[in-house]
Image 1: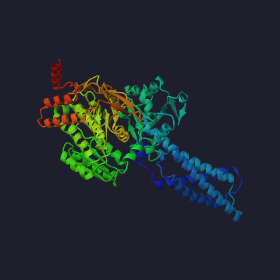
Image 2: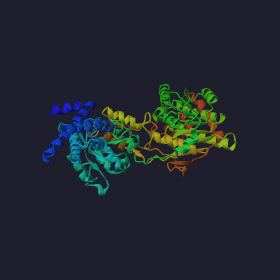
Image 3: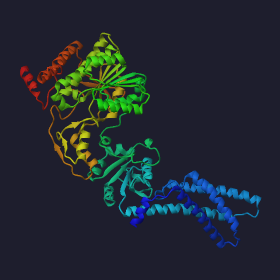
Image 4: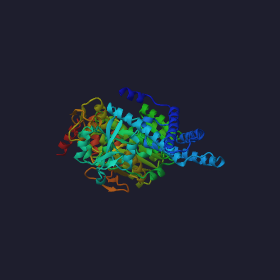
Length: 638
């Protein structure tokens, strides 16, 4: 039996062979019909008439077999659609033959075929061809199941999307799945049968059935992802070592069947406790179409996604700036591949280099500037204070000043929640950048110097960005652990790269100048719970250890989007709020920053951090050598 299964698995009949077999079944069916008919009828059989009938049936049915492609599938993977094609082809073929025979009967009165005989031949033919495929398919399925090559799965979702997944998986030779049932949270559906298998509820009976049927995978309809995310089921599935899979949206399917690229494991990004974000794409397009758009930090996680989204809005040109040569080159190749007609200038440049940036602005005269270039890693900037000042602060000042000088329309700065009540150099450098941009916006408006609109966007951690916690955890899980979490109580806000960039673009389109936009990041996520869930998702049933490494320099347990003295007001997008923050006098801010940047080239970290704390008094270092400055300030105050 095993030899037969292996033979069936490795050998695929050619289309010509299948067609010849179908023709042979047609001939045999007609012969059997004649034998059955004339066994009970006393009418004399005419061999000549039978031969003509056979020739006509073969000719017209071969034509319809070609038209309906009845022989193009693999017999052991025949689906309901394949069987329908056979019925359609035979019906059309026999109908044409019948009409032809009737016409022939008018001209040759002796040529008469009984209607009952003709119908009997049609029924015999349909039964033989359909059942031959069913027998081959069921035999192969039986042999495959007997030798354990298929895995039992359940489908979560009983509406059209779930049923469509089940239909496309049945008879699909790319997968080794045997569908054992459906899961539904709708009471009327529970206990019913769909496609020959039972529908289970979400109570304890489900998990007893899962154990009995040895279910290790559940395929979740994409329309059910939100429900499973918000229900108690998710953790119970993971606790029972059941892996979860979903499909890409049906709009992306190239045919009625799932391919391996469309079936994907559910990622932690799909299960964050937050609702889908919607933006006004039409309004964004109206602002960016036909404009010269500059994007700094273009090769980074955020910058490159902004590039992709802006490219879709038909800008006049893109000016892409980054210090990282290799990823910038990769982005350049991607643009040439996806947007061949788009004029895109890729420039290796440091935003802190004023003369270099002046030349770029002079040559390109951008309308829109999305400023994503920054050093972002908290522990690194604790050890490289001068670089944080020169790139994050001086770089922002350079770009903002040049935006005014060269009459840009909008300047959108990407900031971070770490700028609120900063506890580290990176967060403080971004807060000082925010202060400068906002003070400059007020100054040019009050003095009627320029019409540039300066907008700041502030959000939390971005899923999947370079150096973020999720790629780190994935790599640690891949290696078998341990997974390192800094502290058992640490929490963070998360947003996907695509969502963050969409909100940046919408905030840029709605801003009028001087605003700091904050994004609704959903519920904060406990990093320890995130690690546990990722381990369960990635390695069901495997015991991967979690270790606590301790808070890093400058790291706090939780991030904030507003400091205690701030409040916010809504916009037309409930995911975007405007922060009301303290306003600074431009000339005072300008003087402090000029001095801060100048002194940064002395590379005296203590003096530089002390100067940053003077500009941002709420900057209190945590788990850092710079805590001594705060203690000294407290002594001086007392």
